[in-house]
Image 1 (cartoon, helix red, strand yellow):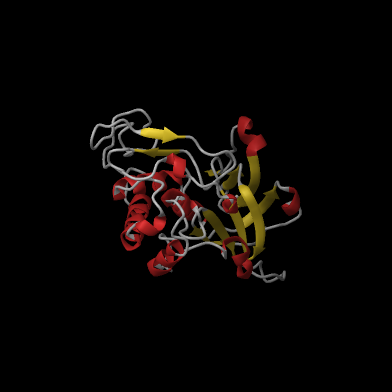
Image 2: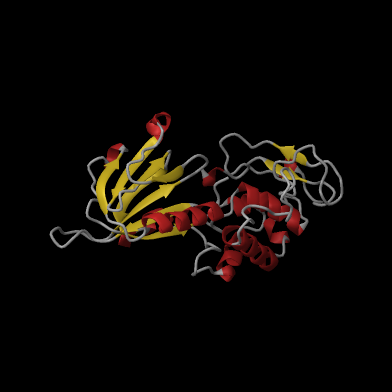
Length: 285
């Protein structure tokens, strides 16, 4: 599922195929960008901030004016990028989902499918998309002390809701939030102020970085490669806990409430408040 490690790995894949290439054809298929043109610009970087992908382009060639620009995209649950080689196109059945097409001087073509929050602005204006976000463990400017400070500022917020709030720590999605609660041995609804936050932030950064950078480790939390056993609790409702054998429980999400997503937990390994302690939080919508 797309989380901060997913987007970081995507950025590295795009680097290998697009970095240093010049755009020779632009087709942005969202109304507000339909007249914008990236032709003549070179792809200089794929930066990530949490679940946000920032594709940075050079200024245009010397014959035209304009600053370096950034194309912002968000995968949410279903977005994806694809790159085809010279003379190749996507299957016809996918064309209705295409939101951008970039033809490159290498002959390759980059396609963005079902991309969300697609936008284009001067690179100096990227704060409009990411300025509100908390520290990101996968960035060089990762600041664990600031992450702890932000989490501690609202100590009564349940563990899962606090970590899903991207303004506190950026890049942790529902999979990692559920798995971290199990790894730390706390109920998903333990008040975040009751958790050892230094330990939590350190562990969160370590698992996200391991998932993103170690071959074969992507979103595997147990160290087991077998299907159905690569997560401690996520996706394992009604199955025995891999540690104690107790049946893993699941509670569905609260409708239209991103602070209360589908949650899995082992009642034995994760003592504490149950789902009755959930607090609807509309600030994250």
